[in-house]
Amino acid sequence: MRFVLLLTRGFRSVTRKTPFNGCFVAGGSLLASYALYSNRNIFNEKPFLSALCATKFAPQGSVVSETKSHALYLTIHLDPRASPQECLKSVGQIKKYVDTICPPDLRGEEDEILYGVGFGLEFYRKVNPGFESRGVSSYEYRERSGSLGKLPNTGGDIFIHAKCHEYGKLFELTQSIINNLPAGSVAKFEDVYGWVYRNGRDLSGFIDGTENPADPDERAEVAINTKTGGSYAVVQKWIHNMDLIQSTKDQTKEGWIGRTLDDSVELKKKPITSHVARMVGCKKQCLLSKSHCHVYLGFLS
Image (cartoon, rainbow, N blue to C red):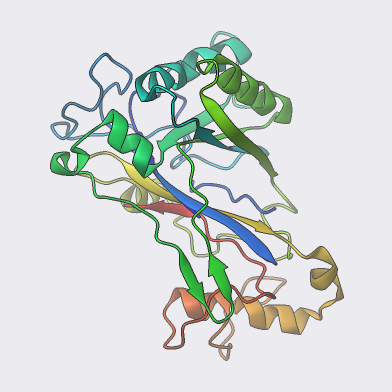
C-alpha cells in the first residue's frame, strides 16, 4: 500500500470534479501511501516555505475531477543517492510535458490530460523538513496483517496519477517524466494503466463507487484539507483471480461485496466479512479474504 501526499498548487492542470478512478489489476496486493499538498508553487527555489495562509485552494486536476476513459498510476522509486531537490525540480516540469503532448491551443475535453503528483513520506521529509509544523500531518502507512492476509507497505517516492480519454497520451507522459529525471536517479518504476470497464464497474462486475460523493462540493469537502489545501491518497493494486470470479455464482459474490450485482443495492443481510460491512465497521478483524476482489482507493483529509 502507498499513502501519498498530493500537491494542490504548483502543478497546474485543468480542474474538473470526481474521486480517483480505480486501478483494478484478488490473490495479492501492492499497497503504499502518498500525499498531494501545497497551496503555492512547490517547484520554486524554496518549496513549501509556508502554505497555510491561503483561504481558497485549487486542487490538482486529478483530485476531484470526473473519470476519463483511461488512467495512469505511475510509482517511482528513487535511487538512495539521487538528489531529492533535482528530482523535485524535474517532476516540476510536468505541466511542460503535458503541454507538449497536448498543446493548450489545440486540446479539448476529449484529449486533455488531468494530472496530480504525490510524494511518499521519506521523500517529502527530504524536500520539506519540518512539514508537520506547517500543518501537514504525518502520513506514514503502517503494514497491516490479519488471519486472512496482509496489506504490505511497498513504498515509493513519487506518485503520478493522470487521466485522459487517449491511452497513448498517458504513455507519452510516463516516458517524458522518466526520461527527464536526472540520470541514474530512478531505481525502478511501475506504470499501471486503468480504463473504464462496463460503464463504471470493477472487474468483478460490481458497480464501483456507489457511496462516493457525486456532487463537486461534496468531493472537495472530503478530499481537500481546508487548512493546507492538500489531500492524502491511499493507493492499492489488486491482482484479480478472473477464473475464480467467472466460476463463482453471483449470489456468492454478492455476499463478498454486500451489494447486488445488477444494481448495487445494499443487502439487508450481509456477511460481516463483506466489503460493505467492513467499511462501516466490524468487530472481527477481517483483512484480505482471498475471495474478496474489490479495491479501496481514494483521498483522505
